[in-house]
Image (tube, rainbow, N blue to C red; front, side):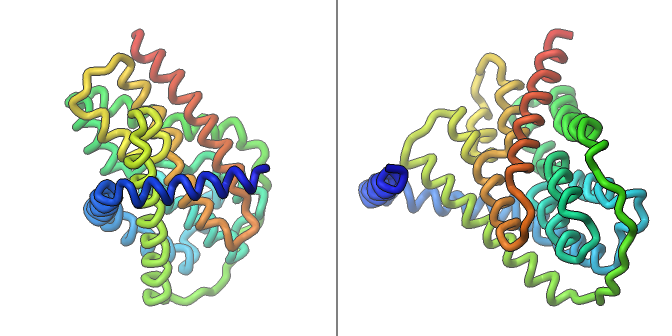
Length: 273
């Protein structure tokens, strides 16, 4: 039954793609422009930097590997956090248990992107800063909740060598995968003509873009839901990164549910103050 439903869904999508090819073409171009100007420059260089730091055992400077991931993820954005965790796990620098739990509290939207987008939506520095703080704080709260489940593991030195060519290759592979995910969900969203809320749940950036110049009630809450959940595009990117390891995507998903609930509550509370 499930397989037949999937077959039917694929056939319907194929029909819609042929019927709306002009929409597919424009959506694909928009996705490439979004990736090229807002995603690729920051994501590409941050993956290279983080891969190099891990090869140089920079995480040993911190009291725990999970704290290192938390701080670097805040600076790097997503899905760089998943790349960092995956690299650490493959090099034996973080246990499977710690890696899975760390996936829950290290999802951050790119800080530069977040500041620019929120300021465009609300045209208010105060609201922009408030929502950014809530986004960061919700992750820290999740960390505090699950901190006791993190195991103590001794520091490991793997003696990896500085290899910029390998880091560039890894960055190109990841950023190309991100482009594919963005394009897929933008095309699906446009040919199905989804409403703003569903668009945001599929692809965060498109959902936030849709909020610009719209006078909606509870716009702050809608924006923080999009940001906290990340959209299925981000979820797909993280799952792709974890596919060749034994780390479990379900922990990332659980983290986004917790973060969405916490961030929404904090946003509601601050609106009434």
